Image (cartoon, rainbow, N blue to C red; front, side, top):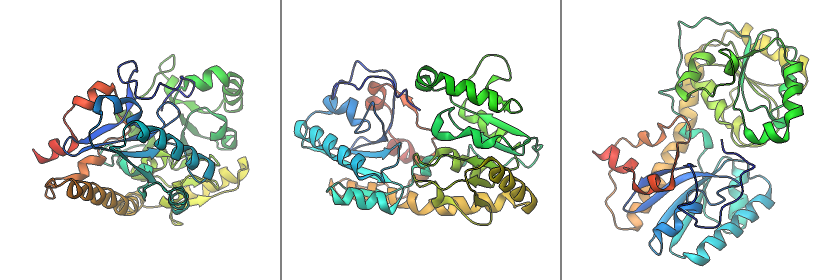
Length: 348
């Protein structure tokens, strides 16, 4: 996650920025993929466009926040127009989570395709540990931010909390953070077990998820919520609330309950899922199947770009490596421009 309080960069200011999120898919043709956010409204293009210059380049953009609001899509259109006014050779394709978002982009004339934001979560990292002891009734992996609604966890007796210590919320929502601490004194604050807050490495998270009987998705709106896929790959059933953003595309009534946003209702849903004793392998297998169409669609889009540019597409390569990220890698713009691409790696 990126610090939302950071100032927006000057368009194309490549050398002056710190680590940014994104990957290089291919050098020929030039294809880059990354999320968009306040700091980089057109994804990696916000930082590397000047370095690429007047050469054809394709930027695949996964908005980090939902785009079911037409105003946000209109803003994306304006960002793209600004970008292409400087470099008309550059092409932009938005990867969205829902059909509503797809239609919103089409309405403003921007290319888009459905590829759920969580398609890049790595199921070889997030996996089931059948030997793990279940010590939590539920676990919630979420920034301590108002929209995450941690207060809805109050009635869950045994609760594990994983969270990102977002500097923006520490600075601007300090009272909210204190309030959540006071509301959930019984919770296990996992990031603070060994003393001061420590950001867990991605590969540490599955061990904690596997200690829970259920997982929580309590925001009313956001993006597709990466944590939802992480939970499901680890075989956890989910208690969610009604939401906008696309995470419920992974829902299945066998292991997903949409509860009312009230503490007692959330706790009751957690108890119900525990009583169902859902097979974790069923949860994981179904989730992989649900994401397979989005992943195949993205690979097909990449193949289409290769064809349009007259470059042979390595069809026999293991393109699933494209989704072995776990989370967006943060690198300098120079690294994104010079690193070995996904296409080079899987074709080797």
